Length: 265
Image 1 (cartoon, helix red, strand yellow):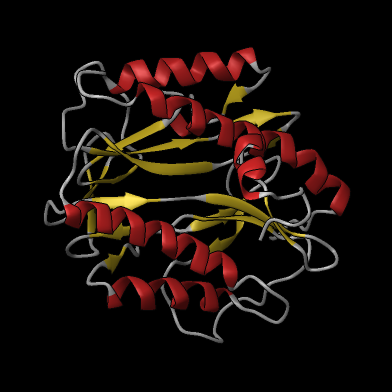
Image 2 (cartoon, rainbow, N blue to C red):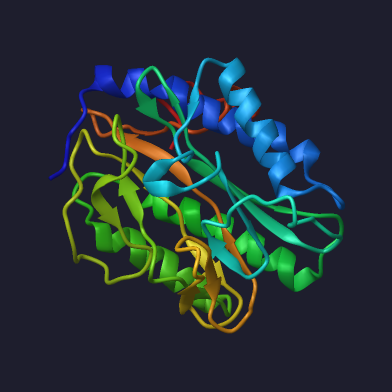
């Protein structure tokens, strides 16, 4: 069941989204060779608490940490650990979901650790472009398949593949709700978008095969062939006038882009 939000409810979600963006802005300075993913987790957790928030991933369906840290061939849901130490040339996706005022804000970015090869830079750039191509399809009359088609068409044209096993999702007072947002598909197919929908778009793009496997911990998803994977994610809302608002831009990003809260898409 899809819970459609009013404009007033969307306004109430904005602080949580902005906090998610702030967390990702903040953590970038700490991503460097030698740091452990547990250290990064603890920094994010402390920052969230100081801002009056709660880290939604912590204890969610048994997940043991406050965010996800997915390194290199980890597609998503990597668990922070004192044993996972970043090294030069790694890439890492940081996925955060703070709760503020009872609402969730969900966002992720892929960062580089020091210098990385040009092919790796291209993977990251293409993945970010896929996110915004998907967002650009969110408009009156569109369907979920339009989002997935735009992402898949571009990623595959660049020589990469789109993960099928994990999708974007509705969000609000509940962490994961309908609708499901696929990052591949056919144009003109699937659920028709409506005003009041709030959901994530979070494409996971692989260098190699799109298939994944999950470790025995029940969370950590890897590429089936050991190839690199990147991901970017935003939470967005469709307001009553069909304005599409990206809720997880940080205040600093909004200022840099010259955006007002209702002119972000």
